[in-house]
Image 1 (tube, helix red, strand yellow):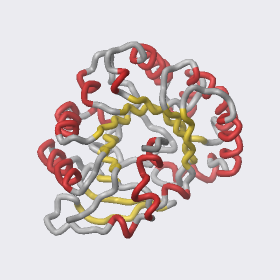
Image 2 (tube, one colour; image 1 turned 90 degrees about the vertical axis):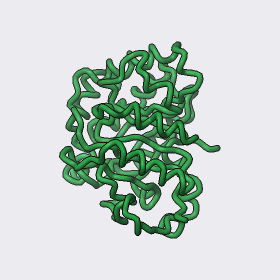
Image 3 (cartoon, one colour; image 1 turned 180 degrees about the horizontal axis):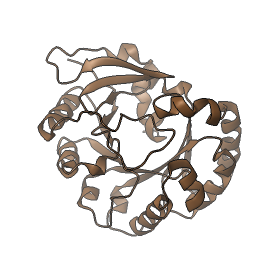
Length: 280
């Protein structure tokens, strides 16, 4: 039986309402599996020992069957995280009852700085307003919150100010990412990439303050072979620094891959920490 890593990213679509210049997700026109096939993928992952499925995209809330998908993850006894830009996630959304984690982006300290990163004039308000509501909702005790920030030349000098904003919000983890030279990120990398050492120095400085949440930094080198992605068409990929390695379609009856051998022992056993900045 195939043994999968504990955490797997399930990219349910490539479609997205934003055009982030650093995006390394699937192409917007990526072929997408139908509902039944996605549920079959979830069953296969569960059978291979997966404990935690991250529902990503694209923007996964654009799928009309997303409630069915997340409910199926929960029914299999796995934790489910939803990665969303927040545009279509309103209050009391039925998705929330099935989630263990919700991950949302803040790449600036206000609307204008966030917009410079994502071309999104309302994203900052949508995320912060939603989190304000969520902090006192019935869902919060069972739901952990991760905020993600991709560091580029556009916002590296704003990290301390972003930290200040997050300190006023009720979150669990702030995950800071070095820009990856993959996807659209490969196009913008030369002009916008910030050296790992420079980011790490700023992060370590912020970590010395009392923030009220865990700060986790992910460098490009750490992502090399550290994750497993199932793409919208069912293709299984693992990341390299500047691309991906394809291992075939998960739904293929002859699919076979030794993930424990491909990934380092540390990454294979601890990719919950790599993905969500937590130890368990």
